[in-house]
Image (cartoon, rainbow, N blue to C red; front, side, top):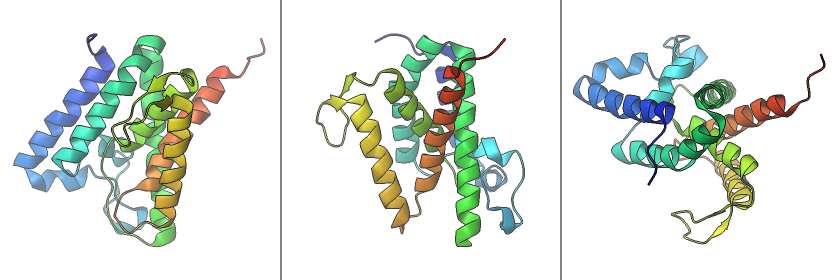
Length: 192
């Protein structure tokens, strides 16, 4: 198993460390969750800080597992600077989409988790390595990365349209959108 690259490792350590801090001092976490605009609890730093927080140990575990699986390889290919850009674009786009959805639905519930950034990494992986065979945990069926990403995207859309679970499915889609837009920007030829 190759070592975890520096940005991926730092993001993972920050998420785990903050989970422990906010477990010990739970009154601090609401300041860093992504609150809806109309809630009166929204602050600009929440557009990024929410991505370092997690609602449960399983939420943290699966996000860190995905970050390790997809983020490590992307960071090795892109390098730390470009990889950091894709993480930021995904997390910010996820936050903006989530704020729009909570505004439209009149929701006052906060959002936490690196899932939006992770879904951006997932889409990036599928775009960079479309024919790479991966075996997801659920279902454990080998498939090409491009199909895995497409299936996850469609599932997120369907679950978002029928959402009663409290999961921010549209934030996940927003993370994918942010990554897609940035990759398209990188691939656009520049005139000199």
